[in-house]
Structure formats: C-alpha cells, structure tokens
Length: 303
Image (cartoon, rainbow, N blue to C red):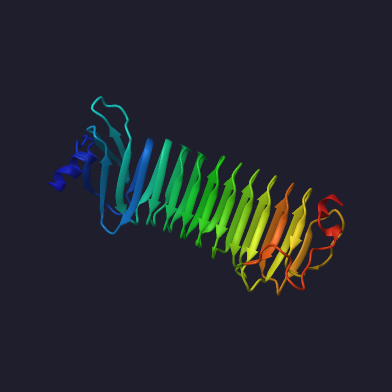
C-alpha cells in the first residue's frame, strides 16, 4: 500500500486522504509554493514524509518530483489551491522551501537548509541547525535554539532570538530586535525605526554589530566582559555601566575603547537614539565605580 501511494505521489496523481505518508530519499528537498493558512513542519527520524490536514471539506494532496525536489500542493474538489491547517512530519535532514501569501509558519527540528519567503504572517523557528534564510514582509519572527547560520528579516514586526549559537544576520524595518542568552560568534542586527536589545555574554573571538537609525541600542552584558568597542552616536546619547578607557579619541570621530582585557569586537551604531552598555541584572542605574563618559564623548560624531 505504501509503495502504491509513493508511486502515485511521485507521478503527480492527487491523493484524496487527510493523512498521507510517502517515502523519500536522503537528499530530497520539499517545496511548498504560494500557500495560505497555517503550516507546521516537524523533523523526525524516518525517511518518510507525512502530511495531515484539518478541514471538514475533502482536500487533495498533490506531490510531484523533479530530480531531488518534491513539490507539494493542496487542492479542493474544484481543483483550486486550498490551505487551512497543514501539519508535516519530514526527515530531520531534509531541505525545506516554503513561500506564502498569508501564512503562519512553524518549523521545528530540521537540520537541512530552510528557505522561507512570506508576504504576511508570523514565523516560528525552533531547534534548527542548518542554513536558514527566512523573511516575512508583515509578521514577526520568533526563533529559539538555532545552530548553523541564520538570516532573519521582517518588514514591520519584531524579531526575537533566544538561546541560539547560530551566526545571525537580523533585519527589521520598523520592529524591535531582541537577543537573549545567545552564544554565537557573529551577530549583525539592524533596524531602521526599532530598538535592539542584547542580553548575554560576549565571546572573546566574537564579532557583534548592532545598528539602529531611530531606535535605542541596549547591551545587558553578563560577566566576564572583555571587549573592544566602537560607538557611533550622531544625535543621541551614550551611557555605560563600565569604566571606559578611550584611546586616540578625536572630536568628530567614532569612540573606541576597551572593556576589561578586550577581545570581542563590538560595534554600536545609532543615528538618533540612546546607546547603553549595562551590567546584566542592573536596573539601569550606573554601577559603583563606573560612570557616564564626559559630555564630549556622548555624541562624538556631532562634535
């Protein structure tokens, strides 16, 4: 029965069941194009693909293969593209490509490449370990326990990354970006109108860049803190809980200084917003023995 089902799926014959199971080969890629509704994808340890749909109306799963690419579609009795709620279980090694119009997407436990392009809808990513390229024009991105490399972009909503070690490229136009307890060696986070907040440790070999045009940049740093820091503030202010040893500062140039013994490379770039370096767990007040830099250093690019 399973062999017959696989043959019909690969040859492009629709399968009119709400729960479909097909065999796949290692190296296959699953492609979902122009979906709407909600899709949940979860990795498992079988070389099989299982599709489940929740809908009172009869739906037809359609699979077609071109080389290693398996494209899936869902249609109703009138052969119209349909999507309400779809759950997929795929091999954890499988590459995944999803494009959507109005689609909420949740992906868990995948080690292959994940490519998501969405116009409207929220995206949840948990326990992914491959290469990730994810974007939504209108919607939030919530990521946890990412490994590998991840490029996450949204137009007008927030990005949250929790407990991840992936190299991160994060971008939002109007939303905030928040990173909590990351252990990554590379972060490039930028937003036009939102805030960026980072809470965690800086690794000694790490490279971290945080940019905002109209928002605030806040780093809540857990000990030990050893970093070489560059600050660019144009029309905002710079505050630090840490003693600053600035070398070679000249008016009208960026502010460079060392915290602790140095090591991690940190860039903080804000045009019109405050930049704050805080000790993690502080309430925002200046730590004992520290202090704000003198006023000439607050807005170095405007002096």
